Amino acid sequence: MNTFASASKAAGGGAAENAAAQTGDTRDRILRATLRVIGEHGVEAVSNRRLAKEAGVALGSLTYHFPSQTELLRESLLLYVNDEVARLNEIAAVLRESQPNVETVAAEVERLASGELGPEAVAELELHLQASRDPALQEASARCFAAYDDVAAAALQALGIPDAESNARIVVALISGMAIRRLGTGQTDATGLATALVTLFRGVQAAAE
Image (cartoon, rainbow, N blue to C red; front, side, top):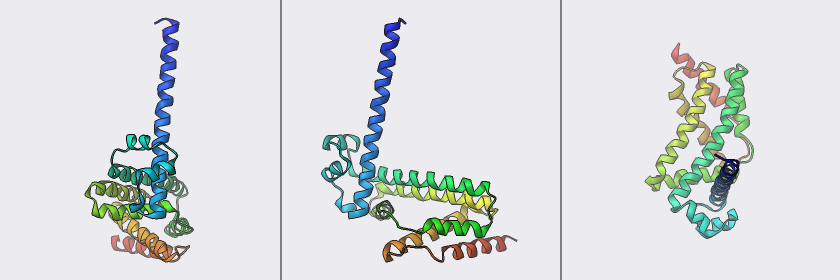
């Protein structure tokens, strides 16, 4: 291959990579705009025109990337989950390296669960509710909880909690229930979550002895 051809191929490859990056950026902007709209106004407020304006993209670009609303809702839920799991995995890794005890982990979970819940957290709840009415979204909802279960199981394994995978689902249900309570009541903390987790962990350990 001559130098000109090599240069042309390299330029073409660079252009293709840039186009792919722009495509990914556009999809990401649309999905994050979807989460904001759902979190602030509910699923019923989702429309192509509104999302295109919120994301700062052309209407045709939105429909090109997401031909159906079901796909858009599913992908927005999975984007949120992927972000959350990445964040939680980093926390779990730190906890494992520090050789934590039950009380330390429970206190850290309560600390992380406290504070203001943003529109994305509201959007996740809205999307789970929507999945109860739309079977096409149920797979995404199931993948969401499976991802949370995996992170919780990793933390339980680090603590030496027996039957980590099964008990992870209970932990996730407890934390999710606290989040729903906070969303509905406007509470700004998760007081009592640490105590509940310690009670659960100690109970499981005692039952296994």
